[in-house]
Image 1 (tube, rainbow over the protein chains, first blue to last red):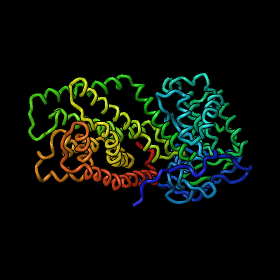
Image 2: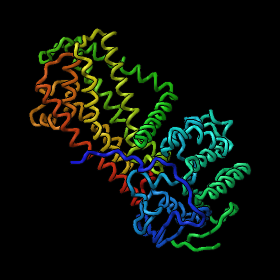
Image 3: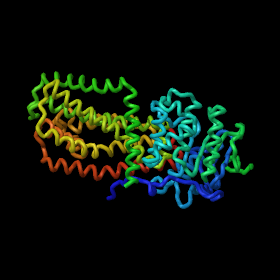
Image 4: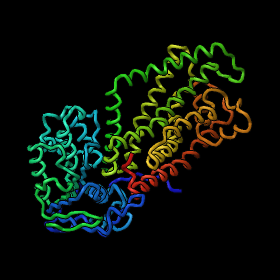
Length: 240
Length: 269
């Protein structure tokens, strides 16, 4: 009989980027079908995200953008096809895959309403296995980079939707992941917030990370990107 | 070593988060400490009406039932609330943080059990102190030994919480199941009355779960109730149940999360 083992990361080194153009995240032949008679939401979708690049995926509501991002983040496991960063897959032991990922979901969920902003970021840094020596520094820098310093001691449920979106974005970038996945990142952001987001995407690309962001068709595609795709009828089509 | 430290830091982060949330609801804090006072007051006056010949301990029925009440509290605050807490994580979307973090969903969910367990321990201790100081319950000299036994009991109870959480992850609901289990344990575990009073056809259920030996041992150590079986046998039972059920609980939780990740329902609520 085997006793349950505790999952700990294989490496304690924080993730870094890679040389420009080097493939980081590879999605191959992804297939996902929800229960019921509907056709598959993703059907043989392949996409390679490279170091230093920003990729955009658009499509109508319900086209499968969120499912694609959830598969890339390892929240969902592929029914067919593969998701990998080098030799690492979402099923790899010890959370090594998830350690490379920064994820922003669509909407305004996933925040602990009654925690203060700095507590929220510290909590996330711990879950992301940011080493003790770097935690305070990265929390402080995230507060500063997303214009949250003056709200650090404020409770999350007493903040506006745009301010909450900044906290959620700060969590996606805080642990300096190699792959940053953003689902409708512009949600509720004002001009300043939008500018801060653009800056952070640019800086992440400069350090060799790769960024994939999704937005619905009809929303102006004004965040800078190196490649653009639309998702329709389960297929990904390059548009830029 | 530093990897274990990162794991520990994340667990501490989850426990601290739950403590912050708990304390932020101030009335909850007050009601949690008033509840035991009223509850043991009711049983104190009921026990004064009763003389139970089958209970041989200095505290009589009151001592017997107070230990049962403490265990009920621990079960309600841990087993009863844990599935509800995980369901709340699903509804508020905060479970997503576990799903995308290095710490991962299984460790994350395990982390959510820590604060309720500490809270349950503290409330149980508080109840005993109230029973002793306010209602004059005599506590045995061996009471300090109850701490390691209670910890072992929690390890043996934990799989039941993991089973319920696995149900929540797979089917999104387990509130009725947890109520059913806690009520069932109260009957077959002998929390309110000696199991000798149960009819023969159901008494076997008292022997096939860890709650009866944990309750018997705690009663023996805290209020000097005589044991039916030797202490070593009761301890072995607790260890045995833990060794068998704990891996099964973890396996079921992992399987339910995997199932949700494959079907896409893991983030649904």
